[in-house]
Amino acid sequence: MPTPDRRPSSPAKPPSSGRKPSRKPLLFALVVALAAGLLGLVSYRATAPDEPASDTPAATTATAPDPGVQEELAELARRDAGDKLAQGRTDAPVVLIEYADFQCGYCGKFARDTEPELIKRYVDDGTLRIEWRNFPIVGEASEAAARASWAAGRQDRFWAFHRAAYAEGAKEKGFGKDRLRALARQAGVKDLDRFARDTDSAAATEAVRADQEQAYGIGATSTPSFLINGRPLAGAQPTAVFTQAIEDAAAEEANVGSAGDPAK
Image 1 (cartoon, helix red, strand yellow):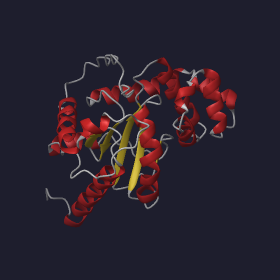
Image 2 (tube, rainbow, N blue to C red):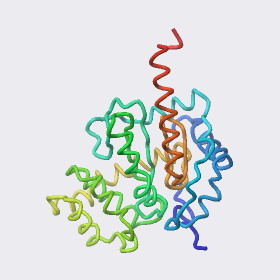
Image 3 (cartoon, rainbow, N blue to C red):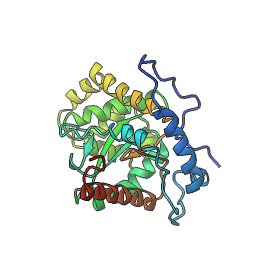
């Protein structure tokens, strides 16, 4: 059985920021480890990305971190109306943050099999906002694709580029400059010369690096990794796992809203 391509053989060491250590990395790793046992994640990850996974929904979703850490993780949601790499209302009760790599087979599986359903069911009705974070960990081609996706976003075509890059068989064609330009054209990017300049710009490099640092900062080491209102979830889980997590988070937000501030 082929080895899943979600992980690099040796992930790059995250840069040192000199900031005060946070509990977030340990909690993310701990919660993902607990979720792996509860969800049968190990067996699911052993399935090759292009093979069908079991349709049997898991009995539970990720274990919640303690309230203080969950609040810290939830605050990573930008809720920025000008964010070109996000979709959904900025005031949606649930925010799903996705840390992903364009060369990751499981990220592609999520993009093709699960994300469209989440958009249809929850983004379109205002319940969910999805925020993308570029987390290229496989190699230089992943870095190039991440910068190109950011450049496509500068012309409001990030999600179209995302769909094109994750289409069945797309990653096997590579992410060289000509291929990235072809994907941009397919995505409807109008100014391809600007796209090329933006892809190679320092701003693109910095934007991707900031996303990477955030991912490493919470302890994520593989893709795809997710936060759903601050609750970590790892891997291209069956759609039912995501829908349950989103509905649980929405219900929690509704309860908080109806009860008022519990601290008062």
